[in-house]
Length: 114
Image 1: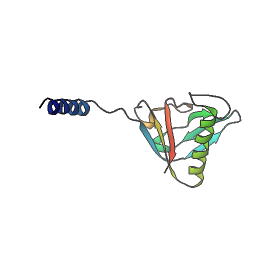
Image 2: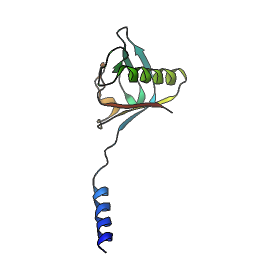
Image 3: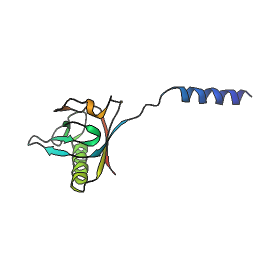
Image 4: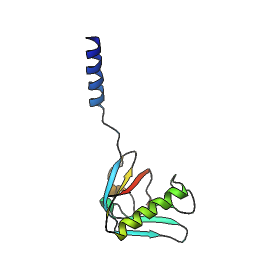
């Protein structure tokens, strides 16, 4: 009986707290650019305004250079093949369009194509 009550209590605890999850900005890449300084700019998925994600020459936005190169490659492949991408942010943001245009999109978590 004590085990059953413990399980019920644990289930109640788990279901009453909202889960922490990424905000997903999903859609087609409208605009993708890389500047001569190596900064990657993207626009489109989920209403994302033109924002800077990372830099292929320097660690920026807490993203390593090699990771940034992979992010850029993923976005470029998706753009060229007209595929949907999913750019996630953690902790949650209000909405994909809440970033200020031409700013660094902080808390980038994942970039993947589908």
